[in-house]
Image (tube, rainbow over all chains, first blue to last red):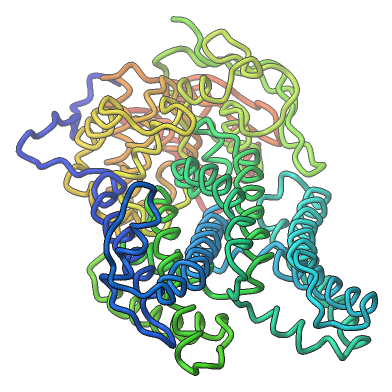
Length: 370
Length: 257
């Protein structure tokens, strides 16, 4: 056999050809800078704009003053300083954190399930949180006889437990359905769990119509935070989620060739998937607990990032965090200023701004030669 | 020559059905062995079992070590598989895709080194793919894609190449191109090639030995001349064929009954 002439010899490397770089190495730095700039811009805008508009430079100076040892003269009155640091800053930080979590979890879910329609609520986290919050609001009304009497902490706690409980339930059902059937079974289990929990929640609501307004307002999502309580609550979960998920960007790239090929490349796809889902679900549950159900961020931000910056999860995940954070902070700014003094539910804003923007990105990137 | 693959009394059940039963197979280092057989005979499953991707009973050893004792990453450094229809991840560039072949060498949670990249560039240039490195895999033609799949397998640095129907999606010209390439790589890098194939003439032209699977069992093993006979093929394929002598092996021509 070896006496045959080789029509195609193995060719030596051509030194004249400029070597291409892996997508993460090629794009990462430029886009990370853009992401941080977006976060900064959104934060300053969120702090400066509102019923009382303040000069962005002064606002930035006041934020720097929070760093121990820094004393800059911002020229703001004590009242204005209080507006920036005590009213707006916690809310902006909360918006950044929630947006980062939802977008990161969405990107992670899309990678784990290899499904572009996946979002952080795919496994029932939203329905579980909704049921938990509804139960807390209804029970509180029953105990106090006054649903407006705030018991801080019970609704977020119940929402958190509900969201995690729903995801765990979906896992268990998916596992019964067959470990070897891949991610499809898990998605179906999530859909089933979500329907079931939503039905329960609807029933509860029907039986307690007096709470509809409060439940409904919770479901639409809001970032009205009393001081630093909510950001502090979310921060530890956000850190854990971000560290675990960001470290697994390369594994998500490997998973994109399918479970069997990933296993042939030396990975444990099932193990990676469960770990990533656990981390992403934890962050989602914590975000939902403090902010209600804010849609669209988790679905669309990772897609926009993918279209703009490339398909590697080593880029998609960190950039989703940054742009998700900036996007939600800006959406919250719109929510509280567009119809001031009334607030528009932030979920309405995210969809209202996000959908056209997504279409725009889709149209402009389609024209790019692929 | 030492055996790189030793399969003894292999049984595979999938979804309650017996796919393989009592399969014995030895592949020597540097050999090209092609598994043939009718649809549903268990060809792909045999390759997947040797790749460690399906549960089995019996024994499979790679380079003398039972596959069950190899860690996944160790196994992935010994065996590289190209599936019949590999998944093409949307938006992924050729370079990023071939880089996935370095996964068994990159520490968990780590990133690729300059040495990993060097191996990838070498695989790309070896398969004449350097100019496609920045292109999206999904935009390549079938023949180009097949070369990219091969490049990923080469980047894996494994000595055993498992190719499941490597030419099923290709026209006759690209079939020859890819198979010549595989053979050239085999000779140059001392690889062992285990592949499945439907085209019997082509299978016989390239393989040192053929393994005929039928109903999950080995029905015949031997040189192409020993296996590709009119009687054997009539019995196991229920096909009427004429076998004629070709330059590089017997040629199987279907004849209308």
